Image 1 (cartoon, rainbow, N blue to C red):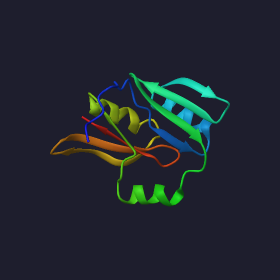
Image 2 (cartoon, rainbow, N blue to C red):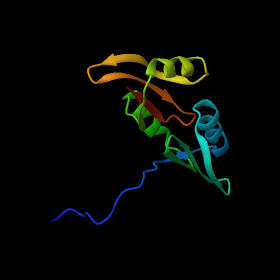
Image 3 (cartoon, helix red, strand yellow):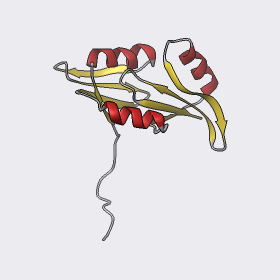
Image 4 (cartoon, rainbow, N blue to C red):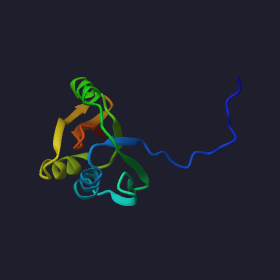
Length: 125
């Protein structure tokens, strides 16, 4: 089978199911510095930073899945960043739950945080 080559990707927006859309918007915009792109009828929203977008949909995140991902350090989102030490310092003083402290790995420096619904977000330089 031949690969499909007749389209160009213009972006990607992972969708997170969140228990409280207003709380999630507040976390991503105030705590992490994203901008609110849109908010549709209080059940769907998009936040963006530096051209990268996350969609938030009101629902009931699976507590079992969240626990499993946390217990096994399975990341939900990974952002590549510059100046990770400064970012880690800002996050450390901004009342954000840190799952994995800043550490050096063979592939670079990284740390993980959790959002209010337990999604694990990795930052990597």
